[in-house]
Length: 231
Image 1 (spheres, rainbow, N blue to C red):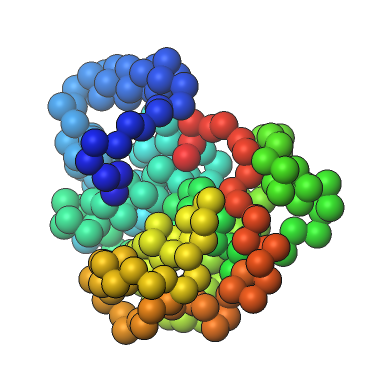
Image 2: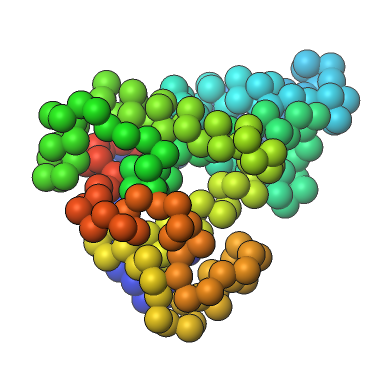
């Protein structure tokens, strides 16, 4: 969460306004007041009972909205995560969810060593904070998603739990400018403990396996500079 009284810069507000208008117009065209009513209508049209709805049914239903047309469906999976967690939506196959790959998860994957960039030119762009192409961004996110899905497979943990774990660790320990592998701030550690509900001491829970913990130069790896409405 963003702390109170923090000034936040919204990237490309005009484009985001277009996306809001697109969503509103499509909901009006479907004669729905909100997204939940729209998804309920989709379920009815598919002639499915509530516990027969699959993740793919929801993903396909969201594709009419421009904001949800990302090939990797970051916003779609994030929306599904929120709806499932709050009990506003049920699906028969929640374990088929994929992780919503955002800048935080990209940064963690690069630093911890889940993904290794072998393209020297791309790696140079990232280290120098130079912009990358849409194709480079898509390929990188695809490979990072594959890596996280492998983690899901071998861990056997639910996607929502794994996403929470990684996301909160990045927020509290693996910040973009100053990664905090060993925190001496008790307040930070205590809040992280409450967020992820696992036993940790005064350091990141991944410190024993993260390559950046022992390779300071690797901590310079961050999410690529690429402006997108998808995440």
